[in-house]
Each structure stands twice: as C-alpha cells, then as structure tokens.
Amino acid sequence: MMERVTLGPVLFTAEAISARVKEVGAEINRFYLARGEPQREVVLVNVLKGGFIFLADLVRCLEIPVVVDFLAISGYGDRGTSAGVRILKDLSEGIRGKEVLVVEDIVDTGLTLSYILRNLEARGPESLRVCTFLDRAVKRIVPVEVHHRCFEVGEEFVVGYGLDYRQKWRNLPHVRVLRGERAQVAG
Ligand code: IMP
Image 1 (spheres, helix red, strand yellow):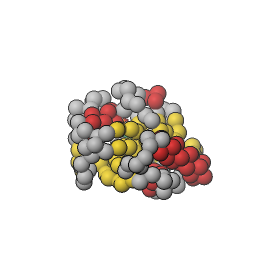
Image 2 (cartoon, helix red, strand yellow):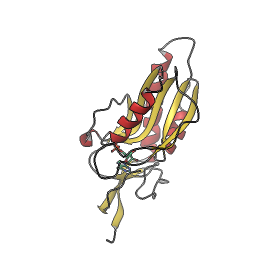
Image 3 (cartoon, protein in one colour):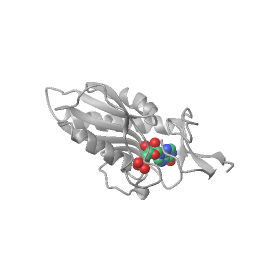
Image 4 (cartoon, helix red, strand yellow):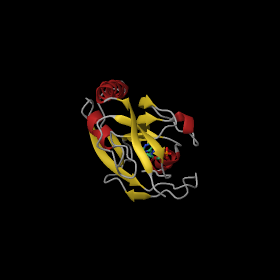
C-alpha cells in the first residue's frame, strides 16, 4: 500500500523543548543532590535509537556525576504484549548497586519500558528511575512509574527530536505531528 504520510503542525518548538529540558534537568539534579553526600554517580541508561537527542541535551543540564550507557531493544510488533521484546544491544557495564536513570524518548503503551525495567531490576541496582521526553499516558497498557517527563502528548503519532517514522525525521529540531495513513511501527 502506498504510504501517504506528511508532516503536520509543530507541537513543540526547539525553544520550548530547550526550556523544558533545562527544567527537567534541574528537577533531576535536585532529586539526586537531595540523596546526600557523598554524591553518587548516576548511570543514565539511554534507550536507542529514539532517545539519543534528548540524552545529549539532558546530560548537559546535569550537575551531578553521571555516566552514560546504551540499550537497544527490538519492538514488540502488533501483538500488544512484551513477549517478543529482546535486547539487541546490552549495556557495556554492570549496574549492581548503582543509581540508574532510564532515559526514554516516549512512553506509549509502556510495554517496552516495563520490559526494560524488569530486566534492569534483576541486575540489582541501588535505585531505578525513569525520565522520558514524551509521555502518552492515554495509550498506556502496562502501568509504569514515570518520575520525570518533559511533555504529555495525546494520541497523535509524532516525529522529530530523535523520534522517527520508519527511521525518518529524527533530525527535526522540533516535534511535529505526523499526518496521514501509516503502517504500525515502533522504534
Ligand atoms: P511503547 O508502546 O511504550 O512500548 O513504546 C515503544 C516505542 O514506540 C517508543 O520507545 C518509541 O520508539 C515508539 N513510539 C511510540 N509512539 C511514537 C510516536 O508517536 N512517534 C515515534 N515513535 C513512537
């Protein structure tokens, strides 16, 4: 079938994103600073590929000691369960006893994140928290706790600032709605 997708209106401008990422960065600084001295290192676990731009901006707003690591996982397809999800690229370091903050592009159904959280929890981190650029709570299937979020979005599929449609439009500096018919995709 021919795809007829086009870029729709801008939902969040580059300026609005930049301002909000700074606020969320400050929120994260406050949380970990309040955990007291000595300041412990926070492992930022970035979920590829959609989260890479958010991570790059967020990390520059953080004043606490951080290291970054990356995780890539397969999509869950159309089945609506996380049964088919698997790790394509694992973390390069262990996280036992560490403060871990998962940095996501968007939490939609929550299937991907719940799989990631279960998987990381089993590795025995000291703490495990979640920061997401976008949160689409209206589509949640699995309840997951999101500790820090930049923006809430509605049902419309969005692209830009790292988020793609079939690997396209990640490079947009803003977030836009995608218009038209599209195949079911995740990633
Ligand atoms: P989940 O439904 O919460 O498991 O989300 C899975 C993944 O689908 C997210 O990490 C995104 O990569 C992708 N995704 C969900 N909604 C959108 C969207 O509106 N635009 C681009 N990617 C999306």
